[in-house]
Image (cartoon, rainbow, N blue to C red; front, side):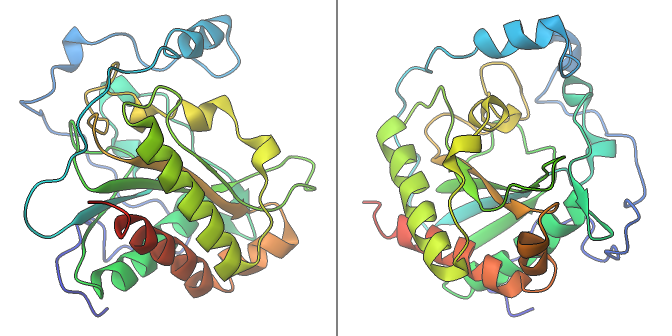
Length: 261
């Protein structure tokens, strides 16, 4: 892999053969006191889950754009990767979609690594992150990569969302629009905006108000569902043409970074 900076990738040697990487209990993190934080995520579909999402719709206070001197850095999260190693505050994260003999985390990690190589070739630092992001993580952009699932097997396409409680709504909107335009052009997948969910807009890694292991305010943030593992058309790209999808994400990231001061 031609890289210009190391990738934060604790399971880089793990084979993508359908088996989860070996579990290891998360070590104590001195910057996160899990015992002092609220209860873990509510069970999906439970009465408390609706109240949980409603309680976090109030926007965060405006924050200055994170833009330190030095090389730019991007955080790429491979959704659902190493969910067996999340800290207690994230203890009910789900395993993700399944299709074509693949678990979603395998697809997300594969494309995250390919995207990282492309972005790093432009002298931009990249961290490939698992389900647990570093406490109050900071970067010039954070993008969570996911693949979707539709029980009916009908839906196809991609969708991008930003935090519903964004501290940088104008910047986050620009990130979303840039990813929408570039990813669509590169992959020729249709946009599926009508299926953007609350779980995308209120994604746990965006929720620094509740979780220690979340992205800090002031960081441009977005989540992209790159296609449906349950769609034969999308699956052909997610599994059979991952380089093309990675190019779409990488081009979108670079186009967005070029708009920053």
